[in-house]
Length: 310
Image 1 (cartoon, rainbow, N blue to C red):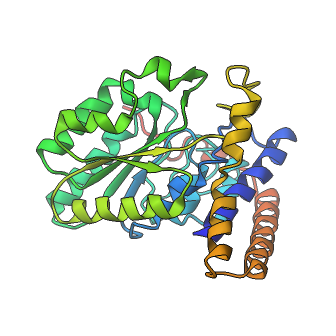
Image 2: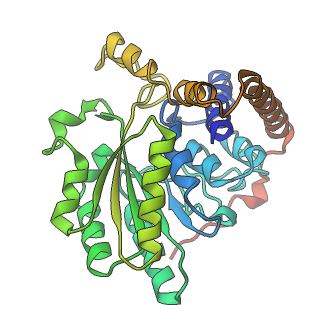
């Protein structure tokens, strides 16, 4: 899990460089600071389980196991990307790892996860579906419709709210009627669990319990992971709505540094082993960057391929 979190962090730091150079087109929403959520949850899943993601989806994609070369190529819009360069930063999908896609519309992925869970139940498999979403998504009607349907049909789905305290620029405390989003589970008679989203071990343990419950046919769980994004809502956001002191306090609780202290402090890993992991990740990032830069652009003939219209 430590290696996966470092990989996501360094991947996004490299993506910032490419974005600044104009090599990544459109907007970009970064996951830095929230790595423990994606890694903790996805380590509780099997490869054939499903996830749906948000506009902040790089971390979910890598944590679920998508090849880092194809992920980087996708951000650069290359033909070798996991969506052939047509998804870009906000719409990464990878069916090989059960990633049904990121989504630029707030809360729109939640019913997709419920549909995947219904499919699993209907086909008699024990696959689980996970919906990642932010705190702002829980004010959308489709969140409540999805929760209700999943609850009454006991669908194998895990609702994971990444509560990073802000919906774009609006503090959650000014936009959400409850202090803890997990309390909203009470309305649907399902468990609502609060976890420290910067502690990957806590996220993993809570996710394992929710996944086991779902596989056993006991229905969904709402998992609220309290965390924080170090960057703004999008790359270039001036972040005038939050204080430097708030950011400093959350960076002191950096999920990667927290796990490193635990691993070394409890004698689970030596500092030299962690340093070796960082070197391996640097090599992987360098290789992925070279792969993406050297990959071809999609051909004009591919423009209308994979397009669905009625």
